[in-house]
Length: 588
Ligand code: ARG
Image 1 (tube, rainbow, N blue to C red):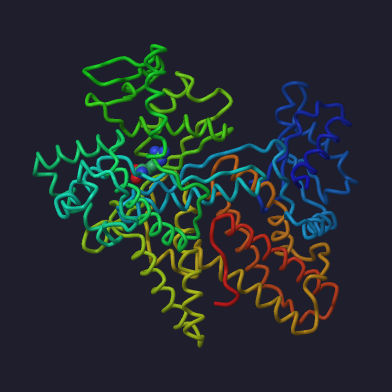
Image 2 (tube, rainbow, N blue to C red; image 1 turned 90 degrees about the vertical axis):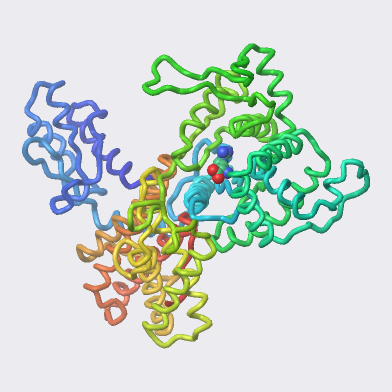
């Protein structure tokens, strides 16, 4: 549907032109003085210079031509030359009725749909998911959903960290513990066992043990580096261990991401890019892009305008092993070949920004990525504890995602049980939904690039700018709609009319901005803008609700109109939280 702002802008443009001024001056924005008007146009101020005329006179000329507009209820010229606008109530009612009938709730799909790969999640196999990976999953999932809703083809890839030294460490430790396994027998040529030689809990214990041991045992570390090298160069037994590690980890990761309502289309990892490395390396050498520097193979990526130094992009270490940059470059090659996307978007900790600057520049300069493919880095800030330092457990360790989720669910469960008599089983289910809203909204309501404080008490509160408050509002609407149904009426047949009062009009005006909000939030990769919209809408609804006796209204058409607006509010809120990656219960 055409945006409400565009309707108004077109109307004002027509008035500018009829009054003899250029239509390009007629920009309309939301009012920054909602106490005075709903929309405003500052074009007369800009036009004043061109036409050498007082801005107020121009504003008056324009306003005179807006007096019998069907779209505007009021157009007023005020000093020094602003045009204050109010929307016509009947027009607004009509607009919402169309929105009500539209399956997409007024949101137009993109005119030029694009193919976008989102690289998010990025967990490292054999290491438990920790809160550091939480933000990537939450933000990436939301952007994926927003992109799809806007009509783009979006492919989510988890891009597992499965190719570094951690693999060599696990292999080395496994060899120390179980040297008789066939994977370590160099003369073994038979099939390897189907069953992994470890469980997920063993695996999760092996890695930290090996990592700690390697810190003060140099030969052990050397051995792990060698194992990494051998794995990367096709050692059969080690490749088989890698497959076991992947199978065991991925099963566990999927379970955890499911709890977060996060799903991926591709479960690829760094190791999948491996086959592309040798060819890529020879290409970079042959074309003269890569050169040897102290034994390592590098590509220069600095630019004259750099404010801070951008070191060369390292392709291979002096021992021939590949690095994080190598796998990311090879993954670009792989993605270009398999998908030729219009964009690859990386949702990664902003502390990795330099890495991505190097990778993007290198890929661009060497033509690994074609010109029509955009590379975007969306760097997010750190989730801190109340002490302002990266979030930790009470004991000071890294918080595992599972435990964090459990803590929040527990907290929500008690709150729900304290609130009213409810079946404990239902309360458990509700606690899961509300807990997830607390975490996700708490994260997404902040601009992604900023650090934020993870404040359990604040995030789980039913009041203020929180997920539970939004869910509570939705549940409140659902309960009114149910009562309306119990009165023998059908909310689906309720026809929205023109607003009768101020708070109702404010609510309706906000609803009418849903399409603009979605478009803008996706364009700027900014889920926090959806949150801001949702919060405003929930507040508008609650003000209206507190002022209005909806169900006891005697005038049936009036009551139906309110119910129609409520239902639309519920639909828009539910669609919005779906874009954020969580959902609302029926009751709470
Ligand atoms: N596994 C990495 C980490 O834990 C994140 C991966 C991000 N994606 C990428 N293509 N580099 O830091």
